[in-house]
Amino acid sequence: MLKFSRFQTAGVVGLIILAALFAMPNFLSEDARGNLPSFLPKGTINLGLDLQGGSYLLLGVDTDKVIDDRMRAVMSDIRRELRPSRAVGRDRISIDNMAFNANTDVVTLRIRNAEQVEDAETRVRDITRSAGGAGFGLGFRSYIVSVNGSRIDVRMTPEAMTNYANEAVRDSIEVVRRRIDPAGNKEVSIQPQGANRIVVQVPGDDDPEALKSIINRTGQLSFHRHDPSVNPTDAAAGLLPPGRMLVPFADSEAQGQLPMVLFEEAEVTGDMVVNASAGPSSDAGGFQINFSFDNRGARRFAEYTRDNIGSIFAIVLDGKIISAPTIQSAITQGSGRITGSFTALEAAETALLIRSGALPAELTTMEQRSVGPDLGQDSIEAGAKALIIGFAAVIIYMIVSYGRFGIYADLALIANVVLIAGVLSLFGSTLTLPGIAGIVLTIGMAVDANVLIFERIREELLSGKVPIKAAEIGYDKARSAIIDANVTTFLAALIMFQLGAGPVRGFAITLAVGVVTSVFTAYVVTRIFAGGYLLSKRPKELAL
Image (cartoon, rainbow, N blue to C red; front, side):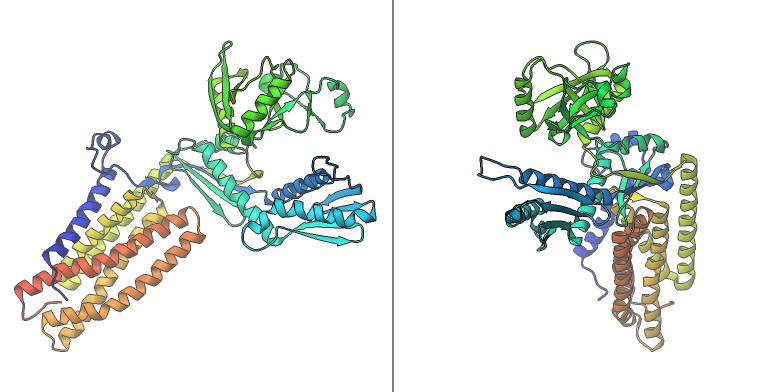
């Protein structure tokens, strides 16, 4: 029970040395880390917002509008499906009216000819079945279609509403991440909070307003045909034909230009753009945006430019025209460029918006704040003092209370801190002030396990057992209590990690890692020291 083979001892020592190697870069400067040999680890523990300073945003996701947009899209699909089609031998189905009630999320249409109700129902069911994806493979329908006389109602199921809302939050997180961390090298934290909120934390960034300006732009890109037959002045007065829209120029491009009348239906949309970058203009001074399409977008772009040479093709971003070039020739390479009066910053930001994609839902800023680096440094110093004081107090207490065995527990405690630092460095975890609290708590939990073991050994010594036998029984009987206590703590940490966000997760991570390492050091490392002493010296009495 107390004896470890040389191989086992070497394995434990090797593990602690490996953890020390992973923890070492945290104590080196950036230049020193760069000069380390390639085979040595260079990762460090990242400092969170409360330690480094930075920006914090709490964003609300308008999931209700996502549901409304889905229902309006279904309404548009139904209207298209009821039109005649010679290709599939489909007759027109006339309707008296079709409307969407945003309060009840129900699309209602009334069929004019009673004999066509059954055919209309079949078409509507086909549309809703294909639009819903058959319940996302989870065994439920996305839409419910009901018929009452000549009226057909379409409503979304609660399961589909939940799925679309969750999908909008997930997609919004990904778009926000691509916008504020396009290279993926910033230590940003973007986490969901509740059903329709997102927490954004960017350590090292002290300008939340600039962060908001990047995040809150919709980023909806589309390419539209120009309708020269409609006078913009007449359109502004309300004389706008169906299927047209009056779109103003962006501020950088306006320069006294009147808004343009465009066809509402886009020829190419932003989801067909696979890449966008900013660069110097090839025509004159200034900057341009280079973009490339996927196969679908390249085909549409080539067909339209080939058939409309000499026409104006408007490029619209977030409801404003950023460029309106005249098509000079067919563009078949699947790429193009947007020219205009862009500065370097405007071109770079616009390219980033296009590249990161459009937000699936509108985001509203519910809370914002910035943490200065001075306050962050104060937090680091306060946390470090708490850690050092707590560590020193525990070490002294263990030596006073348990003598030689207390020293063994202190050595295991040092190994525990090294293991925690190594694991956090290995995974590049972000350390927050609550995370430091988790480490301090772990130190107490680590000695708590040793206290259980040592007190059990004391009981066995008082009952007349010899030291070696007392130690064996003490470790054996304390094992179940140690495991039970730490398993429940580990489960609590997992729950906090799953349900919490930001600092709560930081606390949960350090607590969970600390639980594992403290059990290992308390039950293995101290046993190596204690067993080595007892088996080599075989004392008749033990001062414990």
